[in-house]
Structure formats: structure tokens, C-alpha cells
View 1: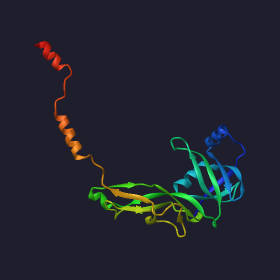
View 2 (view 1 turned 30 degrees about the horizontal axis):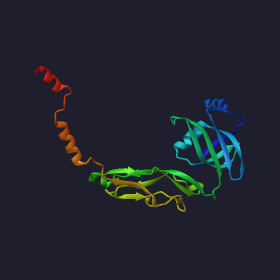
View 3 (view 1 turned 180 degrees about the vertical axis):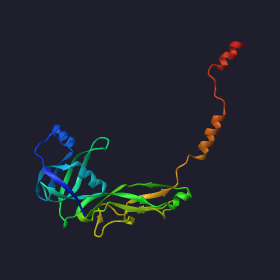
View 4 (view 1 turned 90 degrees about the vertical axis):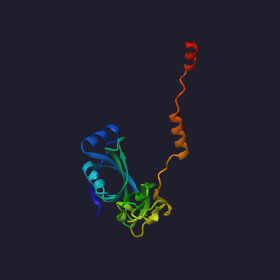
Length: 211
């Protein structure tokens, strides 16, 4: 079920007015797409933050605009603590949308008990699906991942029926490898070099002067 987002018409623009809007508990937004005109709106900051906490990708608009919209782009402050602006894309249940979803790892990889380490190569992946079928995330189960093994996009779990990957589904998402170590001969040379006494500059000169 989509989250409800109440919106109001926004007629004032500019950095100063947007700052005042945010101070009042609302956020500037723009609604566009589906052949319609771009509309400047304001949304309730608390509602939007709650929708994001619940993992919503699509919201039901109420107020100055009606219908469903995709949370297309969210602009954050430098430290990623506060939302500054949100772009909303009109969508319909019959549409197909492209959107990035998070990839999460689940399980304890067998390779970690064999001296290996798990590396996640891709943390987000773009899929194409209907607005009502957008998953919160896709899951990579790594329990059977041994040293030298890898998991591809096609092996992720949670992809909705009818959804497809925008890029190659053979892309490696996570693998288990042995940690890199320094060459043993280099270590031996370093150890030998450390055991020898360093040359003291001026030592021979002092000996000659003493003689």
C-alpha cells in the first residue's frame, strides 16, 4: 500500500523563501511527467520522512495534486541529514518505471570460516517494474558463498514478477576472496634490514679525530 502525502500549491520560489518553507515544517517539491505540466508544490516534512522510513518509493498525493507519484529524486543537505527538495514523477499502475533499489546481504558466508572475506561490489541496482511492485530492497543470501565464489544479479531474491534488470543480470554483486598478504620474501628482507645496525653519519670522522 502506498504512503499518503499531502501537498499544497507553492507560488513563491527562491532560496530564501524555500528556507522559510522548511523552517515551517514543509518542503519544496516539483511534480512532473505523464505529459502534464510541472507543478510547484510543498509537502509536509514529517510525512515525507515517515514515508522514507517505511521504505516507500511511490506515494498517493492528496490536496493540490491527486494520483500516484514516484519519489524520483530527493536532494539532501551536505551532511545528508535534512531534505532540501523532492522531485515527484506522476505514474500510473499501467506504467513501467526504472528505479534503483538497495541490495542487502543476508547470512553468514561459509568462506569467512575458510579465511576469506566477503566484498559487496554493488550496493544498488536499477530495475524496471510497475509502480505498485517496487520492492524495498533485493536480498543476496551468502550462506553458501565459499572462497572463490560469487553471486550475480540473477541470483538476488525479491525481484517482483515481471520486473527486469536494466543492466546485465550476470553482473557480480558480491564475492568471497582471500585477503591479500605481503610477499614473504619482502617480509624476510624487511626483517633482515631491520636487524642490521644503521650507519651513523660522522662516526668515521670522529674516530679519525680521536686518533
